[in-house]
Image: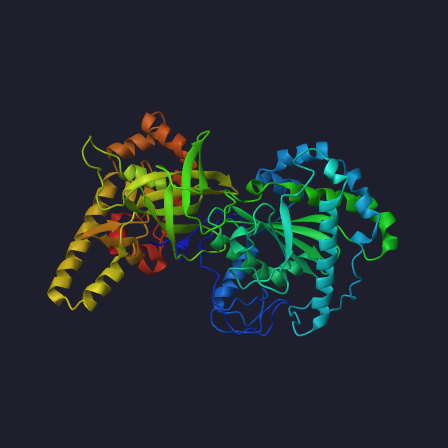
Length: 579
């Protein structure tokens, strides 16, 4: 089952000119021998190694170069308060400031804890596009910054003054671990510091909450230009390991100044927190007020619960059982220690390529009751249709007989886990396990020495079944738009068309289709449409306009019809058939 990471699809990101353009997603993986590494780069260039690249290095393989450049274009540098609004944390920050005065951090500033090593003068060579990883001086300097920041964090956590603050502000739920010399379990990466939940003894890539990286004194622009590939490697590993992650925060210390980068499925935001350290003890009196304010902001971030820093559930994969409940109309996925009538037994993970931005999906083989199922957890744009909503339309019945569309997986449960995190939702679909892909199925037939005539007969039956499913889907106003060998499965002699995450509803007046469902979905006063939109939290007009606008860019490029590759503005069932 595919997740569409190689699709040519335009996610909702405005370009600098104000228009949108398609994004060719990829996993960001791969390796090449690089002449320039960061201070943490491993010298090996063997295939499969994660090597950190600079943004404009000429030694980048084309895919990684495109990957880093495209992420760089998705950067939005904004104020701290505006960032909190985007992440839904503004009200919490207002409440925090009302309960935690800046003066409580005064004792932390009036000592040597905030004094960091005096960095070497910045030369023109320091601002070049080359990081000299063979030199120990930058590495030692950055290690000294990390040690100073660690002492400061320890002092914050142990402060008797902060311990007197109201509950929720008196202590941090995180512990900090140094990973400069040893990679985090489950990954080959070595961020300077990692924050884990205090009440969770697990310390691996699946349980990382916050990243921290220190660099020698430089400008913010230069840092993101040089080290974006390194930061993206960290974030990508977290996206891959944590299926319920909605955004990833990274604290960046550049000399004495602290910055915050937040990576979402749309791109990433950067903001300045301020000067948190100073170079000499004699500088403290003139910087007391400024550093107090920065420590106050830092403490706010470190007292936020994991559910507010991008984690829908803090349990660490692998987990054995999950349950999905509805709380106040919102689906909530919980990891549970024991099975129950409603729980899902997670057996294994289905390998998927996860991109750094845009849509992504995590798939798990599982058991639900006595049935083999697949649990799919996806991040999809809020201005596009959820896959679960498409399956609901496909399963609409004429009467009390069988569903209208055959050849699709049966869906047992589906819903929204997070409504809108920077323009993306997190949804889940629990569906029938449809067996193996059509490619693997026919490879096995050829290996079994089955006569060629029998294989051709099987292929004809498969094609006919797919055509029937597509025709039935069109009758209920649905186009698949992403038909490929990976999205056709066979089990028990039955052919399935799967992965309807890029499907489109055909609704007049934009589409020349006149069916009962099409008319009902186009009528703003029809109960079918209003209930459908409310159930899935849809802005109907926005979604229909966006689906039509992005029609020519949606699908897997290798299997797109000729018309779609020529970017014909409107597609039809014939384009799916050609695919």
